[in-house]
Amino acid sequence: MAKQYAFHFDASVCNGCKACTIACKSKNALPVGINWRRVYEYGGGGWIQDANDPSIMVPSNIHAYAMSVSCMHCENPLCVDVCPAAAITKGDDGIVLINADQCIGCRYCEWACPYGAPQFDEDAGAMTKCNMCVDLVAKGQNPECVNACVMRALDFGELEEMREKYGTVDAIEPLPKSDITNPALVVTPHRHSQPSGQGSGRILDMEEV
Amino acid sequence: MNFREWALIAFTIFAQMSVGAFLILGVVHYYASKKAGPEEADRLSDRALIAIGITLGLGMLASLFHLGSPLSAPRAVSNLATSWLSREILAGVIFALLGVTFAAMQWFKLSSIRNRNIVAWATSLVGLALIYSMARVYMLPTQPAWNTLATPLAFFVTTLLLGSMALAAAFVANYAYVQIKNPGCADTQCELLHGVLKGISVAGIVLMAIELIILPLNMGYLASGSPAALNSVRLMAGTFGTLQALRLVLVFIGAGVFGIFLYISAEETGKESLMGYLAYSAFALVFVAEVLGRMIFYASHQGIGL
Image 1 (cartoon, each protein chain N blue to C red):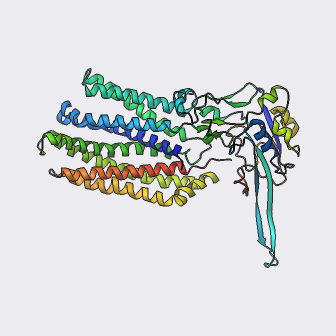
Image 2: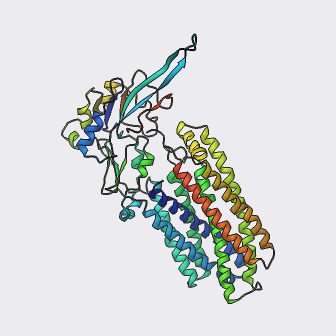
């Protein structure tokens, strides 16, 4: 397998604090409205009448957990295939990068990506996206979001190494199924996590992300 | 809906209308040549050719406003290997270049009829490729509402329906212009006009019927699909339900009801001004209906994932 850098995300310990979002925004000086890493709160369930005493409401299948999402630097990136300007490329290290000078701002990659990674910068007239902090990675350091995580829920390394350490789960709700783009991601599920496509919950904080 | 999406609506509608009109014009010209000879056929169709060119030009201009960096538009053909968007733009440019070449040859009667026919055939084939690649652009695995057979079918139906209705209006306008010099329905042009409008009104009724069949079939198919597809159906039939109903009523009245009246009035001579009003109104109604349909198309897609 070719070299492929990847993120690991541990949903069982993430507390949804969004330090990763802020660290990324700060490191990359992202404008208002653009967040290369975002934290989604996913949950569901509700209160139902107790079977023995209908006057009492009891919790039923209530669950919630946080999911930190950036560009997945997919092994089969749809954005690279569809970009008409050939402005998105996948490097030898597996990192998917947008060349802002080549980008024409058609926003087609935005429709193609199932992770919401490419985001449009109105002022630049071009798309922007997580670059896995290539500058830090080149110096042997971790991306800024990984450094900033107070719960140690994020890790970074080669995909094979991440899989050896953390397993092979790459799709829990609210992420899409992984067979479309093969994301370079390893997830440690939360105890309430449901596999992608079988979720009974919804994203609870859409206005925040 | 923002300005960028308006640019896409204008581009796809105008490009489809011009390809459709070019294709139908070819059929009409063939019919008219058989019936009355090449000169009368040219008299009928040459001015419409110019209108098609202007329509395509407007569409391509509109497409630039969709870009974050309009001046970098030429780079949009950099990824022909895998991007249907690159292929669409290339097909659009070639269609425009061939179309302009053909229009110039036809207008100034350059080269032989045979050579002009070859260029017209090439233009038509590239036009079909343009509509096909335009549909494929939207058939992304991450956009279930677009990734169905209904997208190419609906695009081709819109292409032919808008093309026919636009041509009917163009022929009526051309006839009115010819009449200024030579009033009365005694000449070949008048006979040709009656024949052509009968054909177009039948084509319009059939295409309208196909459009009315595709929509519910597609919504039924999507409703049994993924949650994202189901959300799209809710948008198509719920949130935009009023617009959807209006669009269906308009296309039914324009191509269906007015189509029938157009056919009946084209059966008799001496009803040319009535034919004119009917053809203009049918075109206007179908045009508005197709624009509404395209607005709903862009507003109701729901990506899977985040």
